[in-house]
Amino acid sequence: MIISHKYRFIFIKTNKTAGTSIEIALSKFCSEKDIITRISPEDEKIRQQLAYRGPQNHTLPFTNYSYNHWLKSLCKMKWRKIDSHSSAYEIRKIIDEDIWNDYYKFCFERNPWDRVISLYYWYHKTRPLISFSDFLDSEIPQRLKKRGIENYTIDGKIVVDRVCLYENMEQELEAVCNQQLGIPEKLVLPRAKGNFRADRRHYREILNDEDRDRIAKMFADEISLFNYEY
Image (cartoon, rainbow, N blue to C red; front, side):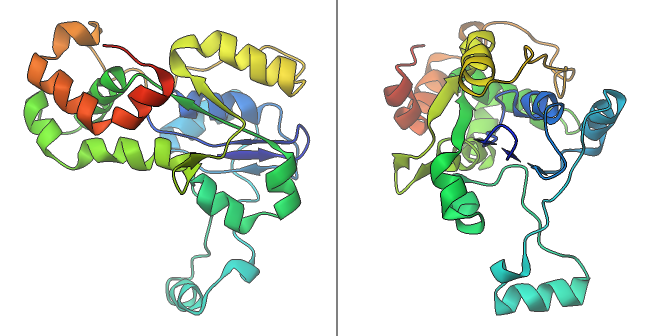
């Protein structure tokens, strides 16, 4: 998640939509007062190699601490920080109302059939492989809801200015970053978290009819909102 005061935008990160690559690329244009959240150590190495700004200003101010937060922080000697996948609801609670209302807010969404398969291979990069049907039986695919549509909606309503589509990545970034925000260069995405999937077949070649229908039911809201087709 990034909040840029320089270019007046809030990038809300969703899961399995190239969010880390976009986050790294946006870091290049951040100033010292902007908020940049942490990413994984291996992805931070990519950001360091590119000499872009790393995590900064993501510790929550004490005014956002409840009594229980104070107790946990004092016991563990760790201060609350804004998470990379913080939701719109969480972000709105911790920033000034004027910033929330005035800054351009955007995120990315992805075809759910393709997105679930991407999560499947990412999840098994360090775990024994199970069947795709068994994977759908687990609670893991639900993470895509919690770090997807639930990240950019509040009370069921979309609260960002633009939900960009992963399938049109280059055009979407051009429209938002260069045309809307005035970022002076084309955003160049580094390759992050993309080396663990060996099977690059189209999702129609991987899913059977039952798995197709289960994903359609699970992500019916996204399919309806963005007219995704199998």
